[in-house]
Length: 206
Image (cartoon, rainbow, N blue to C red; front, top):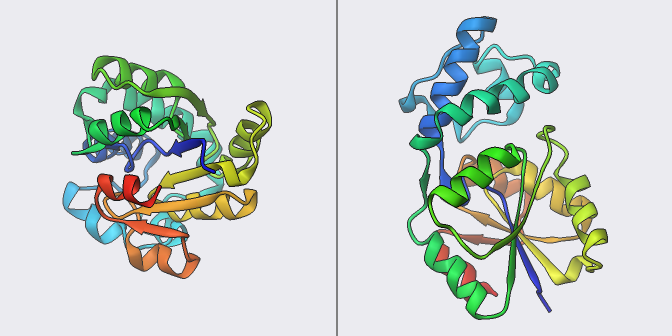
């Protein structure tokens, strides 16, 4: 029986593309990476992480150094983030049906908490964050341990291939959402447990 629904933040609960592009381009100018245009994002959705790093002239080994700086810049663009249509209503219905909701993200806790407060998003009981974009499996395992939950009592909702990998490593079932950062072409070979294309489909699955 599912007790907790854990959500990714960027691309899953919110559309943060404008904040992502503006923050990235500041870093790109400073560290000589390739800049992005909003029109580039649709093509980027179909690329793997390695292909994206090549396109951006951004070596993956620099991720631990760059990501904290990126999310610090992101904070100044937080006004550009929009909640996905239907998400607020879906979270409210989850709460009404007795499910608890949490967020596990590689974004910063400060950014997420600020957004939730400013946009009056309720129903989220816990927020866990890691500066490592590949560390979600550790956060999920910590969440299970701290809340004395079995993997079968939790389901994760995310939009990226790395979310699927983290869930497979922890034994947690995963719902992939079709409105985020990774296209179906990127995630299909990873075989997410479920695929949805509208927020209310999450309710139907549960």
